[in-house]
Amino acid sequence: MALAPLTWADTHRAPQRAGLHVSHSSEDAGWTSLFASLQAGQRYEVTFPAVKHHLLVIPVASKVAIMGNIGGLPTHHTLLPGSITLIPGGFAGTTRIVSSGKTHSSMHLYLRQELLETIQEDMFGNSGGALEPVIGRVDPLLRGLAAEIRDLLLQPHSLTGAYVETLTQMLGSWLLRKYVPRQPVAKPPPRLSAQQVARVIAHVETHLDHDLSLTSLAALLQVSVTRLSAGFKARTGSTPYQFILRSRVDKAVELLRNSCLGMSEIALACGFCDQPHMVNVVQRLTGLTPGTIRRSH
Image (tube, rainbow, N blue to C red; front, side):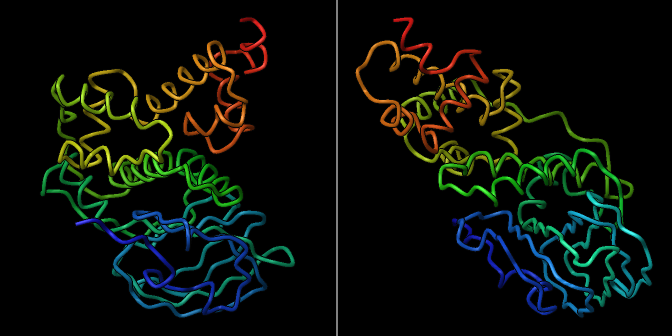
């Protein structure tokens, strides 16, 4: 059964309870395994209930002092911009935030519990432990993934499904590897058959103008997204998202060379968000602008 998108109703609603100004959120983005929001405000105190999904809090602009308790554990830390605070599902608490600046800006990321359960099973079997709270950890990989998600909030577009799911899979896998005490040794990556990979490739190549999500590709093979991602990369050397992007660029180059379609028409036909997005990706992957490719033929 398809999962419903995550919304504010699935979160602690901490920014809303504290009266913060929420500038951006994924409320209407349709993301099924991730909810994200950007908010800012003055010092505040908020009591939040337990929810089943896992929260990452990242200060954006200035360092903040956090006091209170999480799951009954006393908390008194200074959080640096870009640091990671993890509140696992099932933890309630009370926090008081005091910013070193006039306002406190932060990003909240919620990862769906069912996603982590699937990744846990695929990577470690059923013997793994549970996430525990982490306060103010400097983690360059999580900070980089959070920055990518922030960019998607600031420049939203419907054709980002596969990328959002790839980022979410990476977030979940990293949390389970690094922040679960006594985690067992990971299982070898699950493999896909050559026929399964061929089926994914054929589907991608005939649906480039659609929002190709990893969930839909996994459903095509009746496997989990984790198995799809790991198995596809083991067979091809590329993640499904990288293959989708490369296929879109190859199709765009073909149309630039052999058709009279306009740039914006080619962008839509190949599944890019818009013409500027196509220009950026084509130049990054080929070293040439679409205009240069067209003029050379």
